[in-house]
Amino acid sequence: MNESIRNRALTGTALALAVSTVLTACGGDDSSSSSSSDTKAEGTTSATPTAAVKDPLVATFDGGLYILDGTDLKLTKTLQLPGFNRVNPAGDEDHVVVSTDTGFRVLDATGQALTGIEYKGAKPGHVVRHAGKTVLFTDGTGEVNVFDPADLSSGKKPEGRTYASAEAHHGVAIELSNGELLSTLGTEEKRTGALVLDKNNKEIARYEKCPGVHGEAAAKNEAVAVGCEDGILIYKDGEFTKIDAPDDYGRIGNQAGSDLSPVLLGDYKTDAEAELERPTRVSLVDTEKKKLRLVDLGTSYSFRSLGRGPAGEALVLGTDGTIRVIDPASGRIEKKIPAVGEWQEPLDWQQPRPTLFVRGNTAYVSDPSEKALHAIDLRTGKKSASVTLPEGTNELSGVVAGH
Image (tube, rainbow, N blue to C red; front, side, top):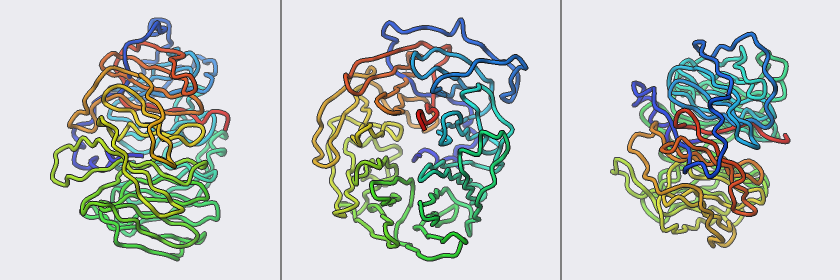
């Protein structure tokens, strides 16, 4: 998840902003008039049964959620849900985790209804999926919840592992395949590093020289990383390794990993005093060679621009409207795929901007200014579907197809 969340405590009053979608619908299906709509409050749904949606996508707008078919992008359901909401895959074929004003709520996206499953707490933050487990970090309490997403199908809150951080902070946690839990260290004022717990929540490792720790990603052979303001911190085979940035301040706050590649994709910022830095370089971190490479894109991007392709390709949606496909091993930009028109990242992180969500061979890109959403085949570079929605969208996510 995202650099943007770190400012949640500072922007709690700016709760009703929407989105990030893509260019004009290119011959797309404007299905807004025929979609089912639920106007009841707080995300409740009517008693009328609805048909299951195949590989659904979920997009947020100011005051609610859109559920769309993942193939043709038909808008199948509109749910009203007040406040600034965020969305992430829950880890199975049916569910999406929605971060709301009151905590994490579980949406049955296939069934098009919010469930009764909720993890209450102030400032719900990162949602991480790895090794068959989903981990929630609640910034306002420092609480970590771990569960098996397969258990969501029961309709009841899963039995799972919990951990309470020493102090509440904007953090993140991830459980490894051997049951070890990596979780960040910090306070509301300062974040310093990470620790690792065994299956019984006993501390077995700690590293406290990762200032401003933020974000996480996992690479091939379960190398797990969190970003720092002066590089990146990797945990692998029971040991922490710090890879320093080439600049005194070289912040890697957001990362994207792939099980098929030992190289992590990250952002890269060098101006600690900027109100909003618009970087033009990304970082590629080789977790095996312990080396960091910077790639100049020739365009800026935002924290919602990073993704990984089906073969581990590094993908970046630039403000010039194109998706750059980067070979993570060489750092070479292999091709550019037109996606949307030119755009500029807004100063407020909660404001809409084009967003990239990748699932399999498809890159989904939103265009809030055009109230549009596009599906792009990464193999051909062509749009396979487009839709114009009633409102511009903000966040964009979906279920894990073919889980």
